Length: 228
Image (cartoon, rainbow, N blue to C red; front, side, top):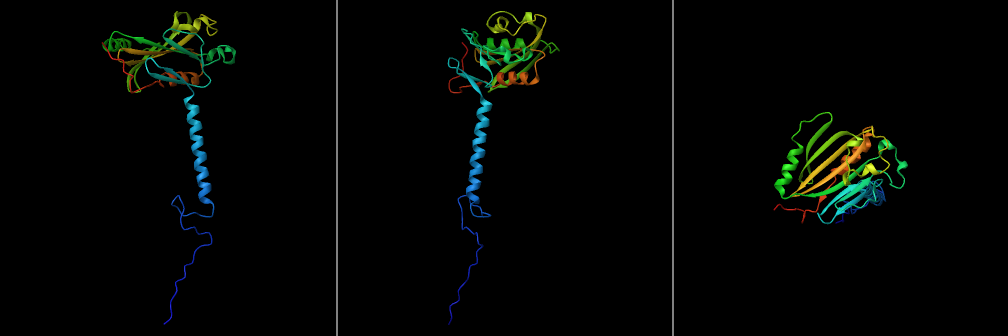
């Protein structure tokens, strides 16, 4: 009796298995594939870091607001506010006057949560017009109202919320500005994020403002400022 052997014929570049669980087309395919995945992951992390940009953190009311890398803190110290501008305050000429914008974040504490609701309701009481539009939003799970108005420079108003008037932004009192404000409720606490920009500004500047105002994130663990 003769023993019968079974011959197993394998392709020249055959590999029995690999860590990815797929049949490679040639030697070294797995390592190249892993390198590609690694590079794509790095690209995603870099893109995400660019998208986040800079961060303003409010430790008292436990929230953060994100703004682009090319925006700068104004350098003005407020008791209850923080301001950023899309140009270096030390070199405002780096941005065209028509595109210079400011965003100021103001914390307001009402008597209770019901007072906050009444305040937001009052913002929605007027009808939308070409000169003033309002919009209801949910930002990070919280009720919000956005108001967009077209106002002359002299009506931007004094005080912390209109710090632009003291800077190089307003040189022509006949100019018109968009005042874009978002009010976000957090119990009896309201976060007012107010922006000003000339009406001639590029659409990309308006888009950045809106993105900043809607970027707010609360620390969900202890963020709620209860009424009472």
